[in-house]
Image (tube, rainbow, N blue to C red):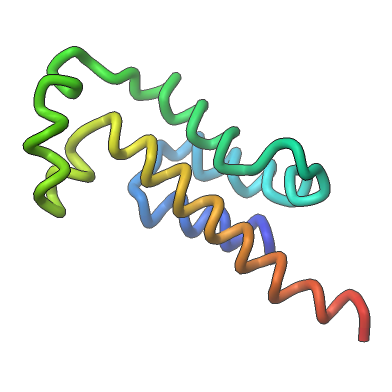
Length: 102
């Protein structure tokens, strides 16, 4: 549940396919460790796979004002992947927690 929703969140943010797979694999492990979250893993991997360019930094002010700009800019896409994969992992944890303790 945790990995599936985290991967779904990374896919909704239009993350790299390797990022989506790694969020599925990392979410169960990182949910047991309070010092690192799946968003840290997916955000870092997305930044490594799609390196931000100088142009992304220059257009950041304009891109954050439109919905399309958020997905076009590589910096904001890293933030979207971080947020959506973390949100999916959190939702998966809260859904699966009552199932663990009937």
